[in-house]
Image: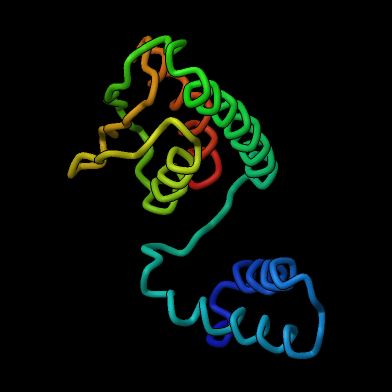
Length: 162
C-alpha cells in the first residue's frame, strides 16, 4: 500500500481539492481525482527531500489561521498602497533574517508562506541556510520585520517539523 500511496495525506488532499475545484462529483471527476491522487505523489516523490513528519498538528492549525489572517491584512495594505500611492509610508527594501530552521520541508513551507503574503517575497537563502533575504514592499524597521517572521512563522514551523 505504501508503494501505491507514498503520501496518503497528500493523496487525500489532492482528491478533495480536485473535486472542490471542479465543483462536481460526477463519475468522470471522481475517476480523474483518484488518478491524480495516486499519480502526483508517485511522480513528485523525488522532489520531496525528506519524509514529512508532523509533530504538532494543533500548531499546524494555528499557523494556518495565522497565515490566513496575515494574508488578508497584507492584501489590504497592498490595496491601500495601489489605490493611494501618495500615502506610501516607507520605501521597499531587503531584510536579512537569521534562521534557526533547518528542516528542508519546513524551509519550503516558510518560502510558500512569505511568497503568498502580498508585500513580501523570498529573495535568497544563504548556502548554509542560516540567513533568509526577504524583500518587503514597505519596510519601516528591519529588526521588527525579522522578529515578526521568526515569531509568527519560524518558531511554529520548528515546533511542527523539528
